[in-house]
Image (cartoon, rainbow, N blue to C red; front, side):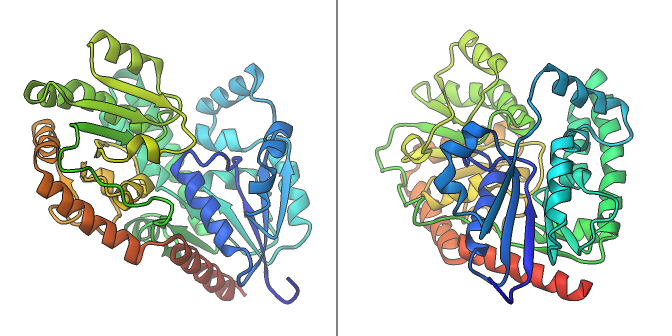
Length: 404
């Protein structure tokens, strides 16, 4: 490790299990940075149970790992988080300004790292006024854009709440971009927004990486049953919004033509309201909740991505394509990914168009096979996790060199 510049990676969340896109992206970048140009140290919260349960996996993430005990997620913590609605900073930022996190980061900064990487812009809330080292933030999304999209789609009081939070987040992201030595985004599109709208002097991008060996090719067979799946964390509001829309506007059109069609939602924490609504409508929907391995639940199906709000890039889209699952998606569902409708997936934004595209995938084995093969070749040939981590490392080196 001697002779290498030191990199401190600050994660505001415990990274295991790998059950959300941000965790998957950060963990795999860290694993592939280890042993490279930097001597890496990871700082992240963990309960004693988490530290014991995931000890072996934690050690794969960095040359050195420092864990700190997070504040208990009790009623007092929830009340403090809710109080963020009435502060000048966004509620998600207020939640990351945890006293335990601040203390742990202060100790880590005392070791004088050469470069500090803050995972998500919100984690800058735990940083002191003087970080004392060049730093960047790793932006999995443009957070302001997500909140503005929520405000546009919401109604009543929630529209005002989201609009207010978006205004606060725009100020926070603007200050973060001007303060940091650089930003690493997950697409060239997002990097351009950080430069053009927020004045980031240096905003670089990385591709979305997927383990094509793990997500082995398992497309639907020619005579496969009409099965559709959605893959994603169901405690993410953008996923909830998309699936409620799919349930109410799209699924009835599919079921009217294919009464034998079924749908599986693969992801942790599906909201009770969604499960109850599906039951009340007597839908052929199944909710898996958290699963250790999505492959056994998704293999041989067609994948839908009915997102209407959100940001960043969808790792789950590339994972589905790596597995050979033919995909129908809204434009936002594949935003930032270099894919072409009709070649790698089917694009549909209106409810009728989305239903028609899903019905085509169900009914046309040749179309399914063509999309699956082309999408797999694209992901396998261009978007490995190793390639994404290498570009991340190069971007960190460039930002550090410019800061020096």
